[in-house]
Image (cartoon, rainbow, N blue to C red; front, side, top):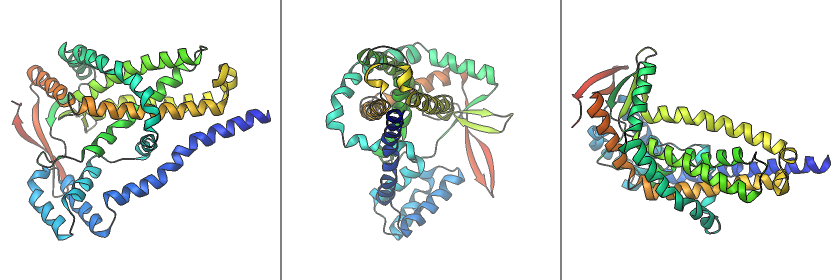
Length: 341
């Protein structure tokens, strides 16, 4: 019993260490983004522009003038704006230590990433070129009764966001799916090699499909839930579907498997501390895979996938174009252009 208690304590400690590392990382991140009084003043100015609902580009000269007034250079100004449009939380900082150990973990990450590219292309063919995702969208619209419109997201096309921050912002779901797949498969009473191979196969399929869906829904497509007075961006809707399953599933599976390691599996993984180490390794390997996916897919094919999907939506539904603006403290949906070219 003592040995089992020691194993559980070691496992919990191993899992807590990455969480504890997020504290200094958040401090360093805040310093890198900018936490001086002049930076906070600029944040307040930028927040007022975002909250107004008007395009940021309409206020670009005023924002640049404010940045010059507070002696904020262009690089810092871009970082502050990107951090506000793509905020990072504890989930993101859990992944940063993987950058330290990437020389060691790059080989297993590459082994998983190689089959991921053709599988992603396959799901692009199925979901986008064969219009399966469009049919799913029509089913969602029919079941919920929601309207579908175009509504531009906050951002300034004349001032692209800091690419590193924007990429990190998308990582958690891609990464946590890897841990989720591993925890599900590790229930099976197979050898570690077999568990690893099944995990890779399941992870590749999940990530490839979800990456295409996220790329397709990252544009201006918005659901209007008139009954509940909600405006739901399509990518937010996708993350609301995936996030709870992954988040709650991770907590349940991880806690159960750590507590019952010695009873639900044989071999080295029956040791709670060793199993916890494999979970952390999977987390960091999946992070490297996610970064590789950002560089190879989202920066190259991602935008093209989104444009093609939006053209299919426009062709089928011809959604109206709206702007959500705030005037005298009240939000208003304002008609924009009818349809898109």
